[in-house]
Length: 234
Image 1 (spheres, one colour):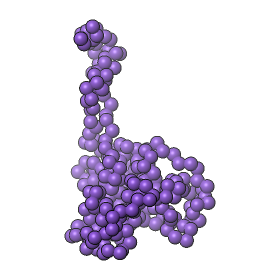
Image 2 (cartoon, one colour):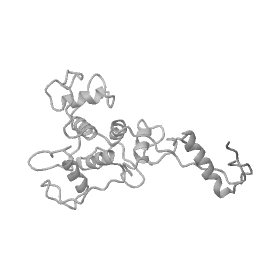
Image 3 (cartoon, one colour):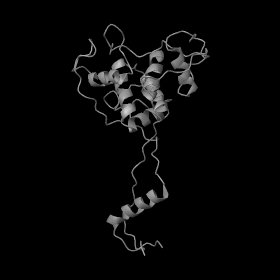
Image 4 (tube, helix red, strand yellow):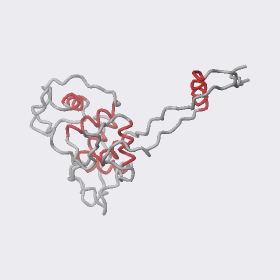
């Protein structure tokens, strides 16, 4: 029979944490706190951006900001994807500078870009290049995300013509429709997908959270100071 006995305040937290673990109770984190100066709590993608930050996928764009309306470059995309696949603490092997002609070993995100290639998620932009400074389009993003989620050999079902501006046979048509089928996107409005539009950092947060099923990590359990005078075990 479990009872509480006298314990000091230094043991009190351990007792209650153990109780929560035994009962399977987690203290969910809240998205009410604002992490970035330029992403207010009423911003349309606030919760997604907060989840991305809480999982360590992004630390923003500097100066306490996230720059939600900035486009996502192909170099940045490599970092987003590899961290989504492997976790926030993932560090790829050092870059060699021998994979793409336009990505030197010391360039920004070089190691992530080369890892993305090694994982078979990208073959570059053609001509032996990766085009790290080019912005990612919504069509390209569909391919990136689904290959990152399912592996380099993934092939979606044939397109059937879901979006008015993505005709069957167009670039990434099957990937785009599969992204919609999985609830990761509903398009850009009016029955369209806008495949040639560039992705913003806010939009990328939404896509990343949905693709990798990211959630807020549990918040630490905090307890008021004080002693407990009950019996714990007997």
